[in-house]
Amino acid sequence: MMESVKAIVLTLTILVVISIVTPAPPERKCRTVFTDLNKRELQQINVCTKELGYKSGREKSQKSTCTMKCVLTKESLIKPDGQLSAEQFDIYVMEHFPPSLIDRANETFNPCLALFDGKNIEQDEFCKSYDPLVKCLTRNFANLCRGLP
Ligand SMILES: *[C@@H]1O[C@H](CO)[C@@H](O)[C@H](O)[C@H]1NC(C)=O
Image 1 (cartoon, rainbow, N blue to C red):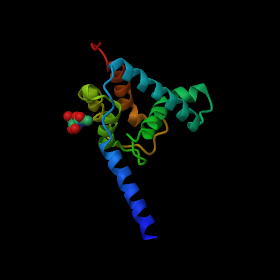
Image 2: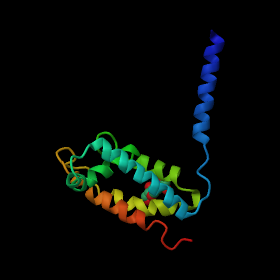
Image 3: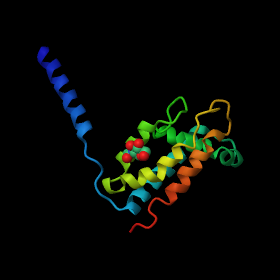
């Protein structure tokens, strides 16, 4: 009995250590990272669009910011209470970008975080308070690899 508890604790410890020392993603070209992230985002937009159950194309386009809010929530960049998570943002950058692109990614996206003031997020059918943030992220994402090979 004691032995199996020890084995379980040991296994859990090893798993935790492995997850902590997991190396940064391998070096990749910016274009490759961009393409992958784009694909991931499109998939999540699809999932969120279904989840939000829009009744019409009009509603879907009127609430496009809400769709993006849903995507950012799925990425844990927005917390369940609707606030941004700067810590998760750092983690996201480190998990999704190779070492050579971390600074660039951070410079690309970090300024957008300041555009969100975290106010009036409850009573907002069209998620307007997320508009500046989402627009900035989208625009800057498009420029992520500008000038790079
Ligand atoms: C991104 O930049 C901010 C502000 O300059 C800094 O606090 C943060 O640690 C940086 N994050 C990463 C992942 O480099």
